[in-house]
Length: 358
Image (cartoon, rainbow, N blue to C red; front, side, top):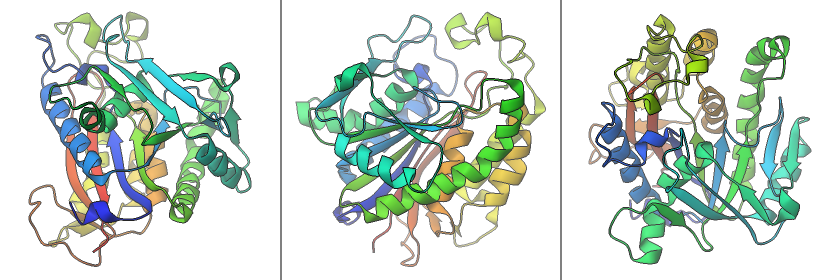
C-alpha cells in the first residue's frame, strides 16, 4: 500500500459503497444477519482510503438532489461551501452525520468539461451557495470513506458518530439522473441510460486523468431491492408499508440472480481466468443485469454503469483471497476488498479498487 499511496495525481482509487443506514452502528442488538460483516469491510476500506490520502473525493449518488434524466453537480464555482447532514432513516441514526467542504473550483471545471461534451448536465446552487444539505445516500458512503481520515485528524481511536473534515479532502458531489416523472419516460430511459451512463464514465475518467488532484471516486449504491424479507425483522429494517406491493415479502427470482451477476461483474468471478486477471464485462452488466433490473430494482445500477465507463477495457487483478500475491505489472487496478450480502429486502455490496502504478 505504501508505494500505491505515492501516486502523484489523477484517479488513485474507486470505492463502491452501500448506503444502508443499518451499517453505521454495529453495537445495535437487533441487527439483521450480515450487517456486522458489511460494517467491518467498509471500515477496512476506510483505513485503506486514509493510506491512499486523496485530496479530492468525487461522490456519485442515486439518492440526492436528483434531476430527471440529467446529472446534477452540487455548488460549482462556489467558494467555502460546506455540505452536511445526518443519516436519518425511519427516525433512527440521526446522531450519525458528515460535514465536508465542497470543492467549488473543481466542481466548476468538471461541470464545464462535461457540459461541452454532454447535453444533460446541470449545476445546482443551494441556499445562495452557503451550504448544501445531505441525506443517507450521501452521508453513509462519505461516513465510511472519511471515517479513518477524520479519526487521524482528531486523534481518535474509537468509532466516531460525527465525521467532520475541515479542509482536505474536499468533495465533488454528483446526483445521478432520475429516470423520469412519468411511466413512459421511465420505461424509455431505463434503456437509454445504459449508453448515457457508460459514456459519462468515459468522460469522468478523462477529466480525472487530466487533473492535478489525487482523486478517489466513490459510487453510492445498493443492489436488488426485491429480495425476500421477514415480518420478524424490526420494522426499521422492513420496507415502508406503503411499498409492500413494490417489495413483496416472498421476493423475486430476479433479485438473487441480479446480485450474483453484479458480483461476477465486479470480481471477475465468471471470467474463468486462472491468474485472477479480468476486465469489467460489459455484457454481464448491460445484457444480463440490465435485462432484469426492472424487476430487481437496484439503485446502484446507475453507478455500476458509470464505473463500467470509468474502467472500460482496463485490466484488474483480484487480490481478495490472497493480498500477498505478487502484483502483475501489466494490471491497471487491484481489487483489494469485496463483500456482498443481503441482510433484508435489499442487497448491499462494498468494494475497493486501487490504482496499480508499479
